[in-house]
Length: 241
Length: 358
Image 1 (cartoon, rainbow over the protein chains, first blue to last red):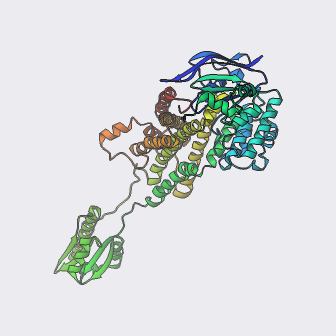
Image 2: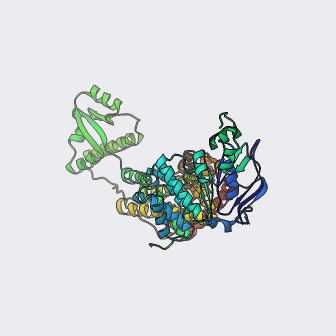
Image 3: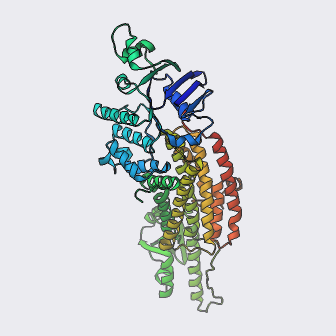
């Protein structure tokens, strides 16, 4: 069974072709990273797969079900962490995750357990506005996972985290994947992709340039290097948006 | 509640209500700010009695000095008398507005120097002094007066200040909080992508909108209770028979102004922009709908224009049932007009609605 199967996905905003005929298959239980410079089309691609943005062309299936037209049956089975911290204003950490849990028919017990798993037990009564960037990020991930989804999408989950929080989060993400869930994440950190991902898709200008295991990509380099060298050799060194 | 999941509707409603109650600025602008106006209008402007006329007596004025005790009392009710022997100085005071009239007597003639700056006081001064002079003339003849005069006050139809301002200010308060609440929620949730996030959860748009509407209605009914309670307890507001029809009026009025707020939220690009636009629509409308003062003195074209504004109908409906003693049927036409506005504006907002900022 394929967790994600996309064929020829295309999205255009006016003149700009954000995603240009992308096809990809993600196997059940796979951990996949989507890499690319800013403006490469990563977020738009993910949003089409999640069911947030209707593709102009192509089709996409998640867990063997069509995502479009909007498929309500898929919603409890996928978990999404968006780039921004999408919280209810002025709620505490605990109220926040319990509210999201209720939307999925999940009780407050599992919700509180998730706060523990992401290390926010001493922040349960802190309002979300008063959390640090890293704490907010962890809460946002916990809110995406509270209903125990089969496929998880994370958009730059470790942005704004300090190295301690980043490594702890890696462990968390790896454990989520070990329990059989499919994980798709976007990131700018090559070490993160190398450490966590079974395969990485390198995107630029709305297309997937390569979709391979980090080891294969690195072995193809002319001189010994890292995944970052692979990334730069694929996407060039000019500044992006 | 521990362990059990709340239904999505209640979870959302509770989250929105908590967010509102913890936002001091929102609570201030929806509850305290309009109440300040109620206190201002109801408390400070309630006493519409004329203050006394400041009268400067220059030298000897037999008319005043020789008044019998009873008449002196009546005179002092109208005039605040000070004495000054310098006519030029007294006239200067009148000219500057520090006194209303300077009075002198030359022979048998009582001369009042006054200005027309305050026409009411000028009229009172002239009328009262003339009456006292006439009275003195009658007394001088030694004959008893032929005609008597007695004044009796008739309760008039016009409303006292608190009766008029309570429904109008309530209408403004409800309109403002509904419109700004809806505009800020739509834009705020769009900015933070919470709208997107909720779209991914297994809840229908109906549940999300229903929760937001429920909380706004609760807030509006809370405003109604606070206004009527404070008005009655502190300022002598007396409600007439069908005042309870104000409840459906507030409910439909809230829906109407939520729709207006949604329109503002759909049009604006930022949360601040949405709130400002909602304010820009509601505040002038409040003035033109008689929320702060009656429009009876306004030009005819302005009165006709105000008929196009939903707030005007909310105010009129509430005035009729709350303080003018009209029956429940007086609210039917305003209710119908407000409902029509709500439907049309919601349809317009829905057409312009976008899930996110790009």
